Image 1 (cartoon, protein in one colour):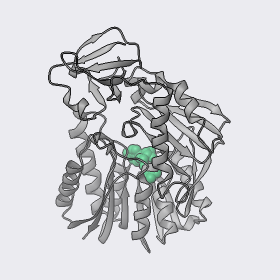
Image 2 (spheres, helix red, strand yellow):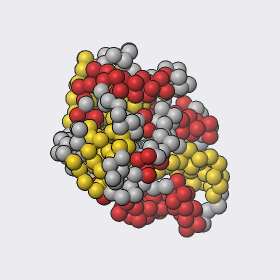
Image 3 (cartoon, protein in one colour):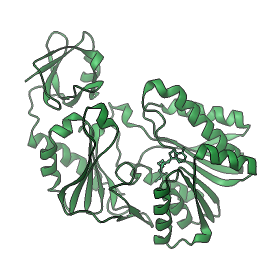
Length: 396
Ligand code: SAH
C-alpha cells in the first residue's frame, strides 16, 4: 500500500484523532496512490499511524479513515461506521417523533470524512464531498441501500468543495425510485416541502431544527423578520407558535415560492406573512431609512467564510448585518443571530455581535447560546465540525 510519511513533528494531531492531513504536513509519499485510494499514514521515520484516503488535488491531502494501521478499509469497516451513525440518530428524541428528516451521516464527525447522508422520509440524499467516499461510492451505496424504510437514494454531490478535490459536480438518482418533485417532511408541529433536486445543500437546513423550536418559545404575539429565510422554516415554526406576522427576506425567488407553499401547507393565511426577494444588506438599510421596527429578527446568513484569507472580510459582513438588524429591533426585542462559518470561532462571533451592539448603541444581553441539532454531532477531536453558532439576545 502507498505510504504518506509526515514531516518531522507533524504526527501529533493525527495521533490525537484529527482526521485531516494538510499537504504542508507531508514529507514524502512512497508509491503513487490514485485519487481516493487508501494510503498508510506514517510519522517521520516510518512509524505507522493509521489509514486514510488520498486526495491529490486538495490542500487536505489525506483524510483519515482509521488510526489502526493494520485494519482493513473494506465493507465490514464501513458497515460498522454506518451502523454507529444510524444508531446515534435513531435513538435521538428528534428522529421519527419530532421529525421525519434528519442527518444520518455527518462526515468527519461520524468518522466518515467527506460523506453526508440526510434522510427525508423514505429517501436518502447523499453528498460524496471528497475523494475517499467517491472512491468507495459503490460500497457505500450497497450499505445504504440496506437501510429501512427506503424508496430511493439521490445524489447531491454538486457542492463547490468537490471542485477543490478535483471531482466533477454530480447530481441524480443512485438507487431505487425517482423522488417526487417535492418531498413532504414534518418538524414538530410543522410540515415542510423539500426540493431535494434543486434546493440548497441537500434541500433543507436540518441543522437549525432545534433552534427553530427555541424561536417558537419566544415568539408569541411577535412581529418577526426572518432574514435569509430560505423556504421560511423559522417563520412557519414561529407563526404556528403564536407569532402575529412574519416577513421573509431572501435573494432566492425559488426559495420564497416554496416558502409560500409551506405557509399554505401549514394553514397560515396570506394576511400573516409577506415575502420579499432582495439583498438583505440593501433591504435592511432601506428598512432603517423607513423606520421599520420588529419584535424579533432571525439572522441566518449563508456561510461568509470559505477560507482563512477571507476571515476579515467575512467578519465585516457579519458585523454589518448584525448592526443593521439591531437597529431595527423594538426596545425589548430579540435577535436570533447565527453564523454557519466553521472557520469563524464562537469567540470571534461573539466579539463581532458585541462590536455591532456597541456601534448600534443598544444594550444587549445573551439569553441562550445555540448550536447545531444533535443529528449533526461534533467529533470531539474535530472542532471544525462545530460550525453552527447562534445567540439569542435581548435587545434594549
Ligand atoms: N434560515 C433558513 C436557512 C438559510 S440559508 C432555514 O432555516 O431554512 C441562507 C439563505 O440566505 C439562502 O436561502 C440564500 O438564498 C440566502 N441569501 C444569501 N445571500 C443573501 C443576501 N445577500 N440577501 C438575502 N438572502 C441571501
